[in-house]
Length: 84
Image (cartoon, rainbow, N blue to C red; front, side, top):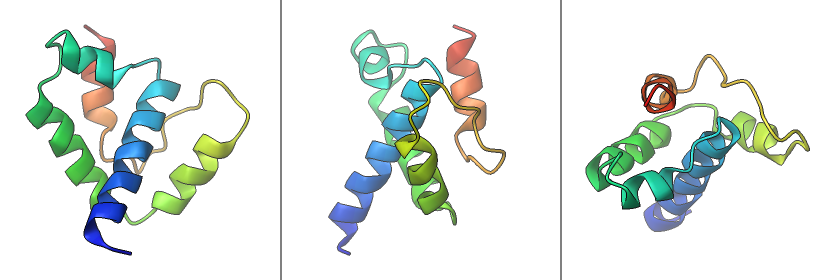
């Protein structure tokens, strides 16, 4: 898989996992509650994860909300954003 395809896949994982946490990261970037740089850093953290297939399986589940996995490298960011 090319780097661009892999980055796109992880961008989708970050957006999907955030959505399942009740966060609309794209809207937050538009409102300047999250900088584009912070978003790109979240994708970079996700790229370093060793369990993206597990996240994909979680996101493919029919549940509207899921608990954030312990291994998620963006847990702290999502927690901070939920408190805003």
